[in-house]
Image (cartoon, rainbow, N blue to C red):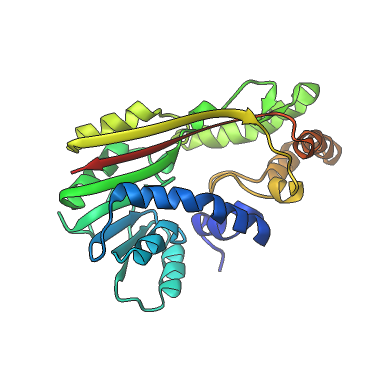
Length: 284
């Protein structure tokens, strides 16, 4: 049986099947998990709802802090993975649900709600925030992390992420078209917000104390040591890998030339990386 696209991405395509890349990803995500939980101010014995739990990064971190945890995700396969890891821990419950419909969770029944990189896939965000507010007890906390992708996408025509593609502009335009078409079909929720938009959503949902920390960085790119993994990894569950996209619209020779052009810059550490992130936490 084939995996759903959420499970396939988290368990395989995110890191191109490379265990070293997976370990590096998890090392990078560790501080994000810790800050989300710190902002949630979860205490031993309290109940935390992790919305879009994925493979359990934040949820299992909350268990280590002594919390009871409700694992929630749209993917039943990912919930099954988490259930297997939990190995019968009675502090864990599992609910298949969308962020905009948490009706399986009772009103005012949890002390904290957490999310990491979930709302970039949600169009009806006002409904989601209303649900977060509904399930929280008075004084309960919402804590989330989201990448602000609009800071780097779509970017200048002559760039592919950090790298200059002016010498292969015709090829780059065709490959970019693959990703743009996908984002257009999906409503472009990954790139349609800035930090103040989320503050406004939390306020309209009835949160009374709201904090937002947005961070924008422009820095020299680091040299890639694992290009093969990079070009065979997918940036998110909705899009193909770089190699899949290039091969779908370019001839084999064109695809090789385009990817080789990027690879030379990546392995030399050339280019400029742009990234922006948002931590938001609020009290119900």
